[in-house]
Image (cartoon, rainbow, N blue to C red; front, side, top):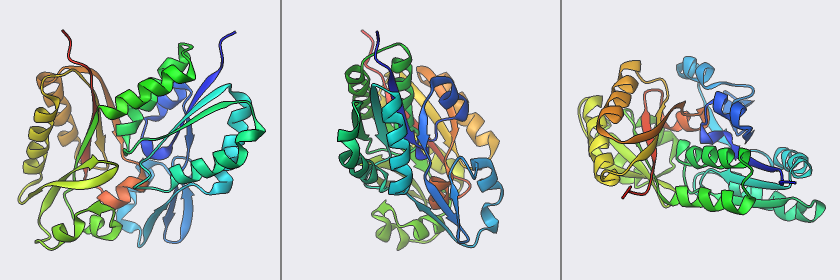
Length: 289
């Protein structure tokens, strides 16, 4: 009889709800504190609600899931499955991975489930894409070893870029490598950023209109992809629909897209980036011969 394998992630993966339901992906919610009130991201608060009321909040901060909440989910799932692959947001951006390790170390002798916990060293759909791939493999009856091997392979070939039109939210978040030097420039600068070695880093410092920032991001992506097929995720907060549609058109016409996902940045990411940010995450497939 095939072993029952499950895939677990946290809400910062930004996987669209319909995909999570269809693929049976278990999601551990992060916490958002808005004006002193704690919300479970995706359960008590949706992305649409958050961005609709964004400018009304006086204080915003994200928190990882608590040890107690993680332990409850961990214990429930380890009794339901023969194997579990946990894939979490970069440990350099959140405490979720460290909490996962602590819970696992405390309870690993209380069950017979094979548990693998992966630090994605990524953010948003840059680790949502391998989670989706892992869940599809689990539905096909693949082993926990095959699933985690493929997830790690995809993570090694993932890139993510994002464009931030307004620096004031980054100033509050302070989760950016090189942020100090960036904030020393005029506040009209519009950075294009990326995830490297698990951290947010500044790639370019641009001035002027938002379209210049998008064009600069696309130039970096073209160079990085170098003609390979990609699985793509287009991410937005509350950016103009025309920008998202234009990005989709560019990728469909200029790149070899195996699959395209549309997703929203979760509130825990959006509060650091602001309501008009956009992003791209993609897995570079091997070049076909």
